Image 1 (cartoon, rainbow, N blue to C red):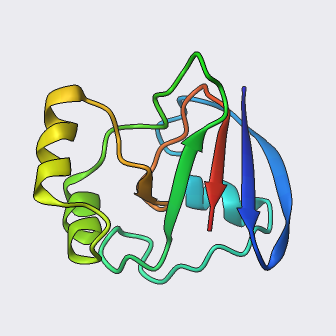
Image 2 (tube, helix red, strand yellow; image 1 turned 120 degrees about the horizontal axis):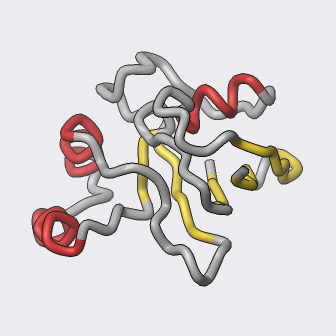
Length: 116
């Protein structure tokens, strides 16, 4: 089980349990199920409305979710959250960006902080 803490300057922080590795449990789906008001539109990784900043709470495990999807990379680059240099680094190191699309990120067995 993973602990996901959702944090926003407009709302009180909320921590929820997530079943890791379900391959269908996106961060956005988890937020909706727990009535966390992350904004979203398309739910398909094309609009960028559900962009969040994710950081690891567990010092031992710094993975922070599944790999970036091609849609995420394109949207995050167009929004100025990823540079080509960072994209190249991600491809080499296999580590994700702090910026993610909640509708694309699959939760893993790790405790994370999600800022929205």
